[in-house]
Image (cartoon, rainbow, N blue to C red):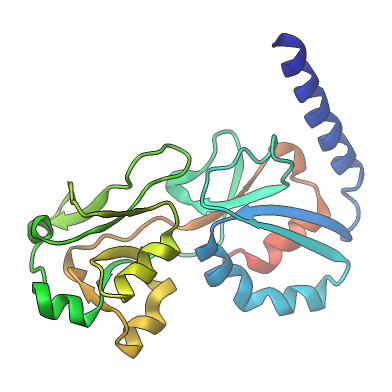
Length: 230
């Protein structure tokens, strides 16, 4: 075990050394792990401009909800919400705090009624999300009378992919959770209906995080300059 661990750290150190030696160039590969909503909301709308400005940077994007060890995984950086950041990393804000929403299809609400308080969810089919890294069901968070609270909802559908949660909700199978910006079009079209908006707290910002050893990597700095908020 000691030899395997030693060899792993030696490989990681060699990779970081090679990366630092290329710090003076804005060409080459930049590997980033990120969840789908970060791709949808941050990268996709501004990617064309980035490619026009830095045509010699190859973005290698790994879309994954899991909390990835970016060094062991061979990534230069990761993007996650602020409450899921890895320790001992440099973090740069890419967005403002993110509005969250609980949503359902109109026909589901017509059949089952619209919840007026978070406690009403105990009588609904709630489509839940199992966090890949921890294996735990993500809590359903609310603000009631100015205080943060959680409701232990139930339901017969659990996914490890948040896009599937939204898709199931749009099919009338229950109430699900999402970042609001990710489903704004479906809300505007009437495909989804927001519930409990007055009780739903915001989530943290999206951050780019990366090892301190890479702070001088030019292609990473180029990515930050283009995508970070002012």
